[in-house]
Amino acid sequence: MYFATLAASVLASASLAAAANFSVLVGANGLTFEPNNITGAVAGDTVEFLFYPKNHTVTQSTFAAPCSPMSSPAAGVDSGFLPVQADATERPAWSFTIQDASAPLWFYCAQGQHCVEGMVFAVNPTEEKSMDMFVAAAKASGDAAAAEGASSAAGGASPAAAGASSAAGGAAGSSTVPPTATAVGGAASAASASTSSSAQAVGAAAAESVQENGARQVLARAATPLLAVGLLAGLIL
Image 1 (cartoon, rainbow, N blue to C red):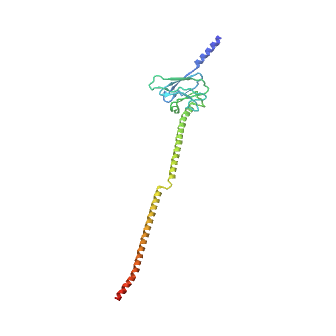
Image 2 (image 1 turned 60 degrees about the horizontal axis):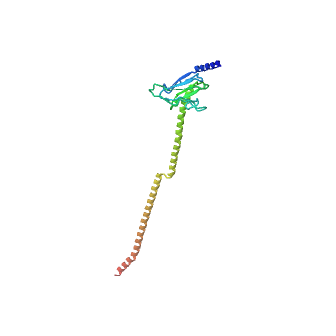
Image 3 (image 1 turned 45 degrees about the horizontal axis):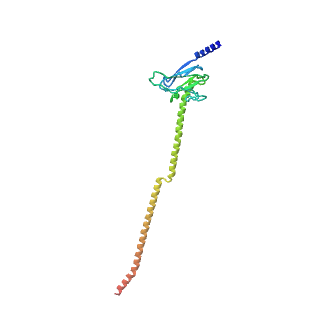
């Protein structure tokens, strides 16, 4: 019994002695983890992060989605935001212990655009899923988000353009006769009316002339017998 207990104690001590501690600087020189990856880590090892200004996180993600927090098969570890003043003399630290080293572990800084600018970290990357591939995927996710935003903006502009087109169509439908054509038509009507009035005036003048000529003829006919009587009377006398 004594020897069994002693053996277990020795094994435990050996395990503790074998556990490694990896140190990583967060934001010490811009948007970086230094180093940006570690290899050879095993279960039981600890990774400690020392934070520098201004405000960063260590958030676990996946290789497929570098800049999104891991939620499956379980929520990943996350330091949360740890702000540091520029003149700070002490650096906050955060660490986690590796529970399973059979597959790579992926991390990023969740502050603003830090991830899409390449602020990512990995434990035990492989040739099939390398650190360079992870960095490239993080930066590409920013390009994809920008493209999606542009597409959404273009989609929003299309209904507005369609509305403008409909308004133009409505305006065209309501203006069946152009204003210029209406004005010309009005001028033509006025000219026609003026011509008609002139014709009526000419007709009236002609009728008046005919009436005057008729009156003269009547007077002439009436005066002829009288003139004859006068001449006869003069001869008799």
